[in-house]
Image (cartoon, rainbow, N blue to C red):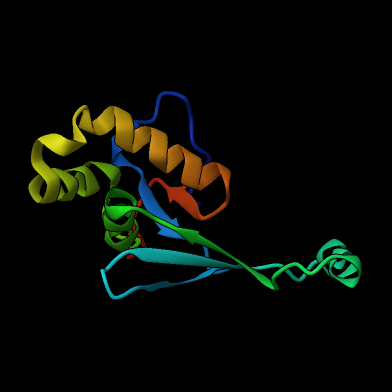
Length: 120
């Protein structure tokens, strides 16, 4: 992040960037699947006793997939909202309340970081 965020910052002007820690792919329907490796020491110890997968897969719905694909490190949240509105129309209303909640969830789960300015 270029500068520390303040409570007075306009959330819609923040630029989300995908975390480099996770891979992702799209399925045949265009829906996004985020792939999370489970390689911590605790994960490995659990696998010794319980058959658990080496990766966790999070399947996003159409709206979440659209947001994820729109996150390119240059577009701000307002611009991503305009893409959602253009693609889904009334289905996304109330648009920015829903988008801000979703972006916050992605940030809290460390799938994205929020920056005040796009990279030059």
